[in-house]
Image 1 (tube, chains in turn orange, yellow):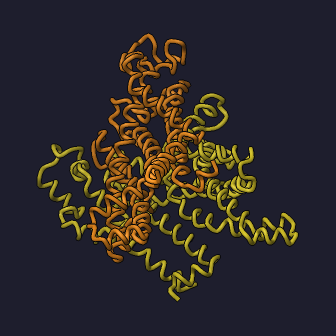
Image 2: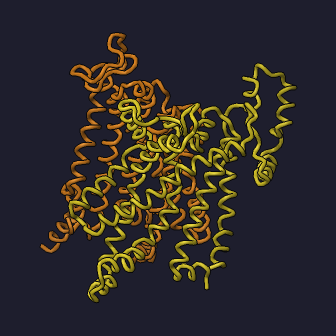
Image 3: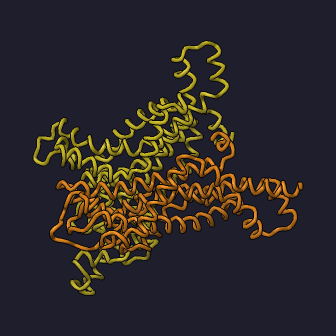
Length: 291
Length: 322
């Protein structure tokens, strides 16, 4: 009986953050919004109009029933192009942050678990890297090579891993002082076991918050670099590329060419940030009680 | 205090060196041959010419030697000249820096004032409608790409309504009157203010909230002090200490936020110069911009550290190891 109760309690405890996340109004809203956007950009291009079909008869048309978001300078349907662009932008964002998670995670682990002098050195390096403005860093990386999807993802990862590294390092150092970690060390567990069984599971929640918010920032960075022609090659639609190629049209009055791709970015980032807020509140029992 | 400042300045030197090394390294790692691009391509140059030009530019030396020479020249103020049209880098960068400081300076002042006011309004009445509106605005400002807001403002106010100029710092061929110059600043300043304000509001809000529930504020209130004294003597000084650090630390965000906005509005500042040089592979300008921006950022951090230490004696002592 008591055994049942304890497994029940531990399962309940594990489920709580997810329940809390779904009960968090803004996070739930963000989750739904993002889900709709992801589904639309995955499946939308298959059902809607052809995003690459140029039509001389429909150049620069304002939004209407047939073209919800209007058309671009080649008469292509912007609704279809925004959906297709979302596919690439979100891919780049998620991929970049996955790379950043690995990079930052390793850096943070080494810094957090290594000797003090190494930690000091690595944090000094991190501070210096953090003092370089992100855009400057990313443009430098991008300007030294040909544009490409993989290259862009790596560039975004290279400017985004520092936040992850800092969180992992701080959490590691705090965890290393806790009794259960000390007990595990005393009972002879090796470094790998320590990291896999005790450190990573306990870092996962704060890490998830940082990574979520970073994906939003990566989306904005992708848009910025592609807008400047320093991101995705111009022939592939992404939200940033659509803004870049729509700028000229917008300056002669075709506002829809920049309004809709931009709104897509804003909505996606707002949704992601809401989820991030929800995760943060869910990971913090004190905040969870207030909900 | 002097000792504290000296320690901090000593800590800045390796940072600056690292930044310079990074700037040098990334540009050196770039593909493409700067010598050949002078003549428009390798095929337009004989091997002997190529070797001669490389030698004149010092590009045939080993990398550490090139770095050492470059650093020495940078320190003497000789930043070289454009590989394409011979414009002196130092002067062009200094000119652009002036425009950038004007823009970012105005935005920074406005942001600090509005950030404190809005953050206080939100934080002093948690969970009220006022708080919801202000916090909602802050959340939105995190999510809006600055260059896109700039484009939208141009579309509405320049293209649509024809009220404000969309590009440059003054009307071309105009007399350059103060009103004309101010009109050119309105849209870039508004864009930056609206998109960069979020973190400032959040910080002031949460720290005002925390201070309000602190024991010493309750005690002061219990003593019957007027709300005015309470806010000015007790709440704001304590709530704003983290804000000062942030105001210095946030300089990179503001400068990098301004980069693409300068580009959109053709504002002749550092950001536009940097992006143009990146696109046309003008290495000397790229390096110049990187060094100037990073130095500014490091200086901002240093200033913030010293200000906070001046306000908080505890920190000063612990850092100086007394």
